[in-house]
Structures are given as structure tokens and as C-alpha cells.
Amino acid sequence: MTAPRSGEPPGTLYVVERAGTIWKVKDDRALFLSAEVSCCTGERGLHSIAFDPDYAANGLLYVGFTNLAGNTRVLRFRANPDRTGVVLESRRLLLRVRQPDPFHNGGRLQVGRNGRLYVGLGDGGGVCDPNGLAQKLWRRHGSLLSLDPRRLAQGWRVASGTPTRGGAETCPDARLRGPGRRVLPITVYGRKAGCAVIGGHVYRGRALKRQRGWYFFGDHCTGRIWRLLYRDGEVTRKRRLVVDSDLRLTSVGEGVNGEIHVTDRDGGVYRLVR
Image (tube, rainbow, N blue to C red; front, side, top):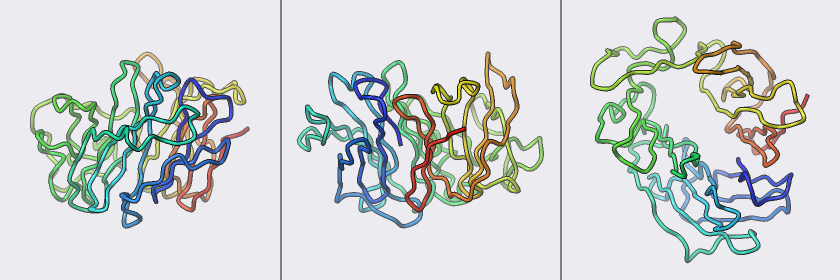
């Protein structure tokens, strides 16, 4: 769930459905429908979209999903001039990754200020990376890719969270091994608070003026939504509970006006209000 930073009027929101449809909510149009998307075994489906920084001018957008074989694909399309659909002939394959299992397949697409497309990939398996793919630096699983295979962030099997603080999940055979510098998370919570982090945006809207600059994120299993303040490389205000809902959160998104929206597994779209 996302909206480009420019080129769209206030209130425009794009919502991704797992089955393969991207909805432009403002005028209730289906922007893209793919017969190639596998849904809805495990966590497969249409995962995310992202917009080129110059989307207002060039109409380029990126789509991440699992295809009918269950493998990850990232495609680029060009929107038509009135931004009500995509030009199918503009399709370009940017990334393909084979997935061994229907879990931990993919995540968000995001375009950085440098114009590069960042792709989040899971380890492609169940608990504790059973296939060991995230531990192999030549594999793309368990990574944050910038469509450059030299830039990988690895080591998911070592721990989920911060093993020295208790309450976080440490895999049975975890050992700090292999090359690279390990960066611990800035905050963690245990299984009593939830099961999977659903992140997350820094709030830049106007409706909640006192919350501007806070990072909002939620949990898939409990529906809880928290905020924390991160400045100058450290957490200056610790995690605080904002909403305790009964939703099964699947995404936290940002509207074109900076307001925070969330989606749940039953298909609902909600906006965070006071």
C-alpha cells in the first residue's frame, strides 16, 4: 500500500491485493491485473509496488510478486498518460529468484533517494531458515537488494531480534560466524507481544501533528501498532503502544499526504486517526 510522493492529488492511494490487482482508490480503478500471480498458498501473491522518483514525468512503477511457479519476480511497467492503467508492452523483467517454499518469499519494494530500487526478500522457508539460504552470500534470499548483487544484507538464521536481551528468538544452532559486520536491531519485542513485525513509516502527515517524526509499525498476529522516535542514530523515545486492534496486519503504508494507512488479511484498509 503506497502512493507516489509527487504527481498525484491529495487523497490518492494505491492498494495491492494478493490475487494480483493494484487498486487506485481515489477513482476506484484497477491499475493492473496479472494472470501470472500465484495466490494464495502460504504467503505467496502480489507483494508490493513502488514508484519511480520521477513517476509524475515518466510514469514508471515497479511490481513485486510470486509467479504461477511460486518464484519471485520484479517487473517494471510504464503507466498510461492519464495514470489509469499500465502499458503492457512496457513490461521489463528486473529480478527473478527461485523460491523453495511458499513462506518468507518477499516483502516491500522501495525506491531510495538515490533512485535505486530496494527489494526485501525473505529466506524462502519456514522458521530459522531451514534451507540455510540466507547464510549463503551468493544467494539473494534473506537479503535487502538494490538490484546490485554486491550489496547484500545477510545473517537471518543467527537470530530474530536481539539474542542478548531475552524474549527474542535465537535459532538452536546459532553462532556468530562468517564475514561482515552485524548490526543489531534498534528495538525488539518477544512472542507475548506478537509474532511478526509489519513495518513501517515515519509519520509526515498533518492530522497528528504531535506524532510527526515518529516511526509507526505493527504486528501481524496481534494487530498492535507502536511508535518510536529514532534520531541521530539512536532511539530517543522508546516503543509505545498506539493501537491495540484485532486486525491481522499485512502492511503499513503512507498516503500521498503523509498519513499512515494499514491493511489487514481480510482485505480492509484503515487510516490511523487520533
